[in-house]
Figure 1 (cartoon, one colour):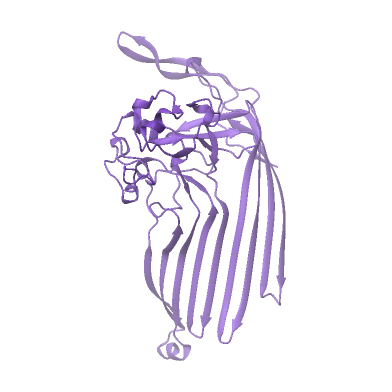
Figure 2 (tube, rainbow, N blue to C red):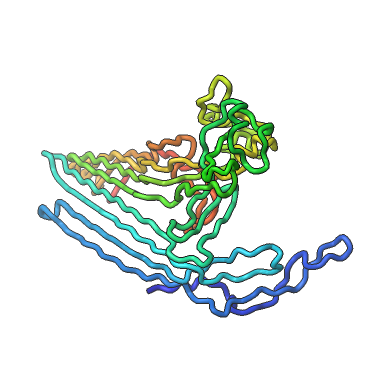
Length: 388
């Protein structure tokens, strides 16, 4: 059992503090003293860990296998309560829920020779998943950047939650007979705008029509290393990737011109709907602030959802070690020349964004990824290793 001591000081005590905009004097807002309710029943989170594994070797240590399974149960998880703004103060975190986290990992290595070639292959694959098993209030929905995240019993933590798209409207007649989002009428939309699934068939698109769309946590992470040597030559490469991941991307990489934030349209966005391109990947171009823009990009949906699975050649290297019979003549014990490259190849369904990019912290908090982080560089290099 492990405790989580990451709790702020004095949160169990109701205490006074300064709040901005407490009083209005004339036309000015002034700060004033207020209080924050403490939680006298506050407790540490506790993690109950169990683990089982096996390490084995075969064929005179040529084949090695390591397997591991773990199960964690986290109790008394600290959650900030959702309170109305009219409440007038803050409430501290409280021990609101429980969650399980489990997974497995498999590592296999094999060494063998073919003539003068010496080979070594090492691979690993693992998976982990979680599920909320207890939560006071049963569920909580947080929204940021038009992306909804769901915490609900029986569902992985911070699951993506939103509307499902059903293609694009192809005619005004289709718009006039379809379920439309609350606040919009048929005259607000045009062919080429996004159509949504009316999940409960009540004739209107609202929060009741949302689905659990996916999960941001990567699944089936894997790696593969291969080494081969032949006399003085050596070659190695390392691949790594993710087999399954729901990646939500927001901002200018999805929305052309992005509310006049970027004033740009990217090449991958050029496949947009027109009367002569009705099977387009993206909805029609719309004016900033128009009802159609609000319909297409102003609500959380699977329009922002992409396949985050990928495989990447992280490192590849070719080297040559000069024979000792030559190096010792000039007083050198060993000399090796090599060339290498990093991130040379990336296999991904979405070539316009780095599949490794993320804006989540270690707790998978936050909304969706905007792709505004520094890109992963493709690197080429060479070197000379000399030992005296």
